[in-house]
Image 1: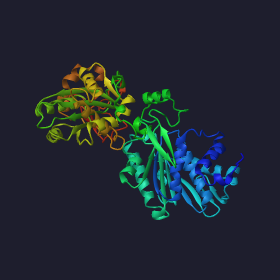
Image 2 (image 1 turned 135 degrees about the horizontal axis):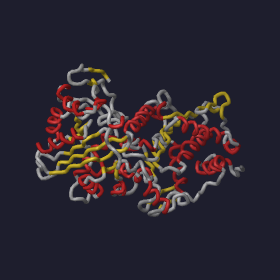
Image 3 (image 1 turned 90 degrees about the horizontal axis):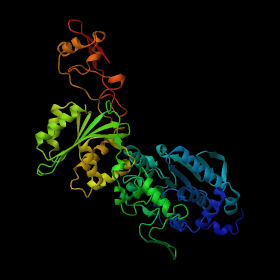
Image 4 (image 1 turned 90 degrees about the vertical axis):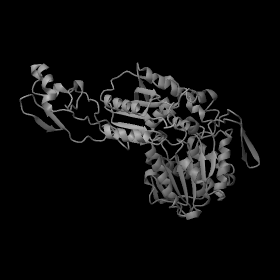
Length: 533
């Protein structure tokens, strides 16, 4: 590849990106996509040191890694071969691939025509190489940043998009970022560039924005309204509805993405927070498919939203959910303007009927009193829930999960279908109490992997002899002498359901390990046998 004016390329990051793209990809860069020119213009201020901490939010498939994590280090090392770079990516494979691309670019004939900087032959590894002059490029996954640093640190999409609803993993990324901010080789003179697409309202970008000490550049997939951007003495205009990459994202493709995208919120993941958030409340009954299977043996959780003590006319709401792996089945719903005693008895009845492992109670209004009553008289564990943020924001957080059809409903339950009708019509429905019961449950469900469900323990209520007497006499002869035929008799603890399937309260991936329990068998007049399971 010929480089007509190498000295001009050495001075312009934008020209360098164009030649580097042709070198590594084998195609010409579409220079009509002016967002690339704009990003390079912003990075010029970063190169000059006028901006030392920069956050760039850009949707996927817009060359942000190529421009910021591959071309920028190579360009700067060409001008300043003593610089030390640390590139942080989500995992080791991505980190190593970024280093591979930088090495390939710096080893190319094109690069060596433009710059005199060379890679040191004495130190060149998969994720780490040095250059003649003392400079260095290292890459590391988010989980392994301890003890590392650099003059310039680049965070490149540190979140996995699938972790949009994983509080634990999101927090780990934020902690890694905090660690690196205290370990910069140049101290306050070091520079930090974070380039990422948004995945959640509490991701690393949100944390950085809350800090308030980073310059922010964010570009949407398409303009929700007309936007103007200064590029030196020129102005780049993006019309309403116009995409950054019109060749890749025409209107039909954008509409398809809006309809089919699952996971992180569309208005964040693609629009980077630019544009209306309300579009993510676009849900209807088709997003709550029927569950026609058997819920027996699946752990059950109750979510209770009591009324406030003063609002006697508002409704108390109860939802009964079965936790089936990563899906949740709404088995029953209750909504009634009733007194405290009626609510307590209804919660107790549903907890015992469905062998609930956990009862969630919104700890507002009458919630505190209800929690005390339930803890005294119900076997299931009781947890208080304090909602954070507005009802609208709490529901919007879980819209991608709902659109992925992970909340299902038990067929043939009128109260359940009425609850779903209220939720899909929020905020325009007459009531909105069911929204609280749903979001409180989903908030706790997001922590099931980290905070497992407790194992249900059925309370024994009778003596083995009196409990089994009549049932034993009516049983077939071949069943006598064993407790296997008497699983429904009060006082008898049975751990298996029909046909050997797990019965109610059986362990699941989200339940804590069961403690040893006694299995009692025998027959009237015979020995009582106890064994530990």
